[in-house]
Length: 286
Image: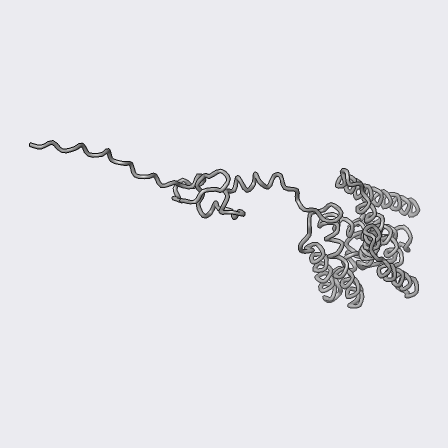
């Protein structure tokens, strides 16, 4: 009887790694930073190989978000401009229905604001238009200069300048137009954008002669042609220019705070002017 040499000990099978986020999924891919196993759903492309979601998030914390020229988030697609254009075109289409269901109800009408408490008219009138030439001009202007300003200011700041310019035009109309005069049109907001382009151009040391000529010609047109609300145009121009100056010349230190204070301050001033004017109208009527 011969003795047999002892058998070598049995080697354990190598365990198949599983995704650290999905333990039921087998994987042989590991995160390049933390080396934890990750399945296809957890893989994030990296410069070399893949990273897990946590490492990608951690790496992004130290990166500064790209900002627009004057502090807003970088704008790749001017969604606000396209939305404003769509609203104006849609409203004009509804105005073409029999009996124009919008103009009478939403036009800027001083007596409706003061006597009826219909303060929404101060803004809604800026989304309505008289005829095809009216909306074509305002729509073209918004299409041309809107994206430029939206990229300079960012979505939120740009929308604030647009709406406050529209409100500024209506407020001057509220003060100076006859009480029974109804006005419509985005011209106040558009003139505000004209003024903003001029201010931004000066701030960036660009040639502003072109926009200055456009503003001058439109002001001449405003006062020469009858039936145009000069108050809406001038009010929008003043408001838009002032707000653009606040956006463009705000100190870099705490710039967002200064810009927010400027926008809020402008709104407070406009609301106060509306309150004072309403009080005066109602006092006179009484």
